[in-house]
Every structure is written in C-alpha cells, then in structure tokens.
Length: 247
Image (cartoon, rainbow, N blue to C red; front, side, top):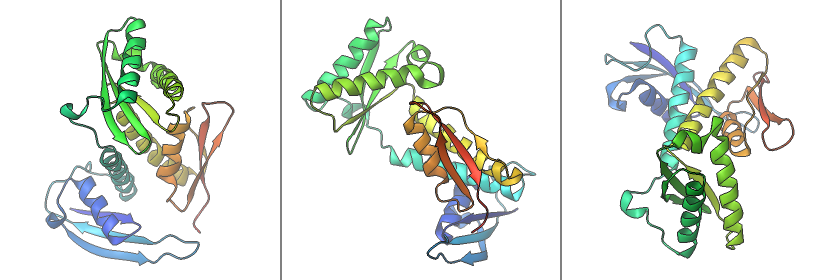
C-alpha cells in the first residue's frame, strides 16, 4: 500500500504517518517527494510517500487529502493526551489546604444540586489544577455542550479567588468530557480547514467559550493557507475559518 503525508519537517511527516497508519516507523519505507525550507514569511514543508505491506487504519479508497486530514487529526489528538498528564489514583489526594478547600467546596455544590458525588484532583500543571467529578448523574453535571460544567468551573474559579489563589486556573472534568471535547474540536478544526480549501468559502463554527476557541485557533495556526478569527459578542463567540491562499 502507498500513502502520502506532509509535515513541517521530515520527522513530523514520518511521525504523522506512523500515527495514522497505526504502525511503527520501521514497518514502512519512506520516500521524500518534496522538501521546502522555511523563510521569513513561509513555513517549511516536507512531503513523503510511505510504502508498506502492513494493514493500516486508513479506510481503503481514501484520497490523499483525506489521509492527510485524518493523519493530522490523529496527531492533534495524541498531542492533547500527551500534554495532559493525569495523576494516578494514589496521587489524587489534595496536597495542601487550598486543594482541600476547593475539592470540598466543589463536592458540596454538586451534592447540594442533588447529585451525590466524589471529587478528586485529576492533574496539576503550571498555574492549573484539574478536578474530577464522579457522579451517577454525569450528563446533568456536564449539561448540553458542557454549559453546566462550564458554569460550575466559573464558580470554582471565583471561590479560588476568594481563597487568594487568583493565579490558579481550576478546571473541572467528569467522565473525561474535557479531553473528549478537545479531541472533537481538533477534528472539527481540520475538517473545516479542508472544506474551506475545497470550496474557497469560509465556515462559521458553533459558539464556543474562550478555551475552546483557543484550541481551534492553535490547531490551525500553522496551516499557511488557512486563517481564523473570532466573531460575536459575549463569552460564547464563533470562530470563522477562512482560506487566504498559498503564500
């Protein structure tokens, strides 16, 4: 089987191929088709052709462009999982007074809503603290398009400020909703970019909160012929994906 992929560097293109094909790098042969070095106003690009006798995860009959979009999506999802290092069960106990109070407050609010819960520390990052909410009523806690859990998260951050920790961003999650949502946004971003390329017409995505919009902007930031901008007023704005042509 033969597939073609491209990346900003040879290594990125090969890793993209491996991720999408579900193979190790030593299970396919690589042929460099095109290599363009970057400049002041131009990003570098390497295009490769992959030859393999192993079965891949790309659906048979997919076009080259579909393979590239699918590969970029897989790589984007993998980056999300690598960046968010979740704690083990033993590490999820609050480490200090602030964590104890924010965990207890979150549990009290969810319980008061009528949904008995267990709240634990999910991850610790620079200026970020993730909390996991376990309950039998996950769908109610998350709400339509995550609006309930976003509201709870906003209140949790207000409380964190009252505790004197305005420097810490509290992120609430339940049933891995945040990671699944981030992966979904990466797919939407790449698929929208491909549709814009194909039709030459811009696409206006659904209203998103600032965090979600940033994911879309960041995902498409390195694609030289695509640009994005936020439109609308208030907290929930829409991202417009536009074609700006080759430069």
